[in-house]
Length: 372
Image (cartoon, rainbow, N blue to C red; front, side, top):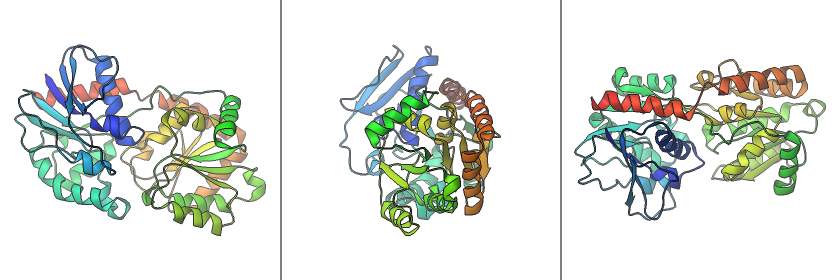
């Protein structure tokens, strides 16, 4: 097979779910496949390391704009490449109509349809205006969870036998490290001296950060054990609202907003934390819980959408709309060392069920089914 892949998100959006997915998919395809031929479309003056001879780079002209979706919505020029299948990993955004080969997209989720108030106007407009048309021409859809498969099939009446599930995985950098060493690094580099409850993810309203702050405020000081709440992520439009809520709840000194954390520092945060809390209202997959489990960190996560499928019985699953339940779960983990140790063990075992090589092998199987 000759497969083309739009790899721009691997360079422009690294550190986010879609950017990580694109980068790891290409890297893992390169690791497991020496037979099929791949043409990876990347921004000019960029490359990927250690590609095999059956992987080639096609530079594409572009000027990165402030908004990723604005830039990636401009299709690559695909003339005269004789591809059998062209794959766009970023929810189909940027898939050209003028392609003389089969088309496939990875559709991670349909959040813009389920929770339109939680995405940007630009992304919502692109998603609503372009996706239904693109799906009519797609040979198949790759998605990241059984939950998303059912959601997509139901929403678009797309044949389930043409929706292929390829679960994600934690990258190899996420592994257990010395808690003592990690805490010293966090103290020196970020000024975080206390034990802490961790949130990793975006600032979208669907991530339920307000609920997390409320839940943290309900934990009695004696049960909190001087723990801080550390909220990572680029301070977007919602930041002032979150900061004000923490201030109003007299948590100004107890909630730390770190801003954007470089990818290489995230394992240090996971390993330094007492527990990761991920109370999202909606996820197509949800990588942070899996990354935390791979680091040996207990996880509290939402019991909605794809998260039970990812976490199974290795996390405490809570109703994200129930602040009291979330608060009690955090308090339990902080005060029950046996529970914490059991969660660490289960999480490490659960994380071993996912690998990027497996993601790549399932993707190749999907390609073969589409191309046959």
